[in-house]
Image (tube, rainbow, N blue to C red; front, side, top):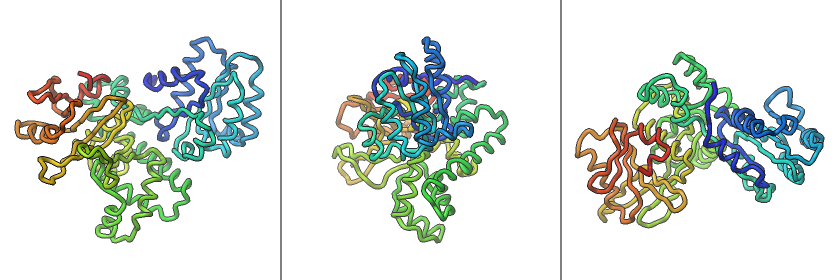
Length: 410
């Protein structure tokens, strides 16, 4: 199945010959290798690059495990360069190689070598590694298929596609399974045998039961305000387990390192400052979240909010949760997302349905307290045509938001 991922391919093409190491990051099995070894490599070949000028190594491939040795890899790549034409080095799962920073910095001295690498956890993007690269790294974050990519190859109408996507998500290999039972089995095995096992092995976790319970709690409360202390209290009161807030914070950091979840801070709109705690967590993919809960808690409101958050990420917005005091009554009100990109800002509410005028007024009320002129948008699961109301607020259906990449500019 050929799935176009033009957003990421364009980013790679735009970064050719920029003198930096192109770092493709993201959760495992989201399509990084396919992007690099299929889509980008085919682009190079179509542009006239000879295959002997494209050097490819996949470190998670058993037949190429020998290249995990830094010296073997370094000398192999150097030996492939036999003329002054441009060569392209495509390296998959770089975190499996010790001292890869030194290898890549050494290879960067070769003027006619353009380097592209992938990795599945943020450890290789830590401050220490960035220092080793001396500002020579250029990250391209890849996510599971967004709805538009999923819909482009889905055999069915929009409503069927949304039901499928909100339950099973956008991991590319999900599309190769036809039966719902097979999709569930794949996602549950992926979480247990790949994500969880990676986290446990990488961080030497001895008591996996506590980590799994934390995953269940975060998945169940996706999009809800929380912090390590609140989660510690939940463990004590509900699970009757004493798990300290510092340990919980460490576990949450592990989940972020693996790109399974992302933390979203609150932003005080009137005070123009960040509120460090509590904050929210969203999953990188709805199917991964649902698999963690054995597909039992499929609330459409939470799924829609998580998908909107992921879509804003794919469109490369910086995202916060908005907070402000309502009518000077010391009552805090929340705006689901404050999305920033350069000089642009959008205030966004996610609402599964607005069947009455009263419901619409409730959702709009936080917007009316904002005194700046940035755009205010309500995304609703209702099947409607986009329109602006008398307060200048854009009301747009979920379908139009997801399918139209420029939907915020309507």
